[in-house]
Amino acid sequence: MIKIGGGNLNEALEELERERGISKDVLVSSLCDAMVAAYKKHMRNKEATNIEAILDEQSGEIGVFSTKSVVKKVEDDETQISLAEAKEIDEDVEEGDEVKLEVTPEQFGRIAAQAAKQVLTQRIREAERNLVLNEFLDKKGTLTTGIIQRVENRNVIVNIGKTDAIMPQKEQIPGEYYKPGNRIRVFVLNVKETTRLPQVIVSHAHAEIVRELFELEVPEIEDGIVEIKSISREAGYRTKIAVWSNDPEVDSVGACIGPRGSRIQTIVSELKNEKIDIVRYSDDPVEYIVNALSPARVVSVDIMADDENAHEAMVVVPDDQLSLAIGREGQNVRLAHKLTGWKIDIKSVTQMEKAEAAQTYEEPEEIVEDDFEHEDELQQEIEEEMNQQAYDEEDIQHDEVVEEEDTESEE
Image (cartoon, rainbow, N blue to C red; front, side, top):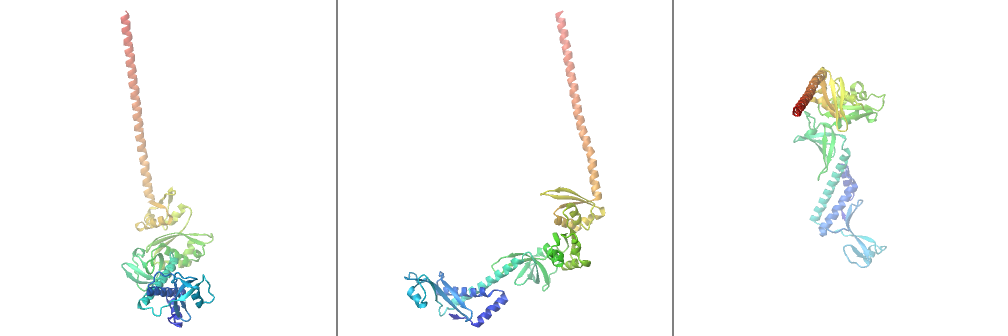
């Protein structure tokens, strides 16, 4: 047995457990595996399968043992021991039992010590990696708080506990300044397993951040009374969120706004004054589209297509509401489309009247053309009848001439 610290070993293992979060059992197992690897390196016998290390935590001693089967006649010295030799170790042992023989070398040597250190370090790193991986796999799809560390190649590095996460440029809010040292609330987008610590991808622009903030600030959502049906977001500019109340006595929109707008103001401040439109959800697509296009007023909504492949609607708004309904660079109608899942075509009242007038003006032209075609057909029929009459008259005249000739010949 080798003494590696006595009572100090337990203290070292407990301190390492507190600092790294790795359980004591994992550390002990890693230490024993390191000793086995060192033994095999020292004895130049990497194929041995009956070698194990045992640690006595109280005394701080660790030893390497070989497990051998008790037999009458030994055929393999590496894995078997005679019954007579086994009796010297334990008088109660019988044939077929197994005994453990200590094979700890007196001096492992420098190479064996390096092997033990290498295996121990590797096992601790693996334990840390698995710990972080399991922790953040559970956090995937949730909101967490971190501290901005630095900016590298347009990526923001955020410390979120036991590891640093990466926020790619596409997951950042346009125009946002990420100052190192500031606390930030991010959405855990993905966790990628690597050879070292897992790579955690976070987002500050994901729509689910808005959902998490509303769940934190609005008790009715957390209790399930108010339900978030859909969210569409263009980070840094505007968000539309559709809500529905499962209790007729609870106003879904009012619950999200809060007394004197206190709840929505907290969320807006967290999102750096991003505009938020709270929309009342409806099973009726017409009503839902009207609500989604707010704050613009709507005159009418015509459903053009509603099936599995297409959802299209024509929306008419007052002339002075057209730009508001479309939004800057089409933002309002684009967010309404993402929110409702409907393709929305917007026209003003004047545009719709012109379109209807043009359609009405085109219809008589089609009728006149049809009439001309009909007249051509009548004319053709008349000509055919006249030709037929002419043919008939010629036949009659021919018959009369033939009769006269016959009469003269008879005379």
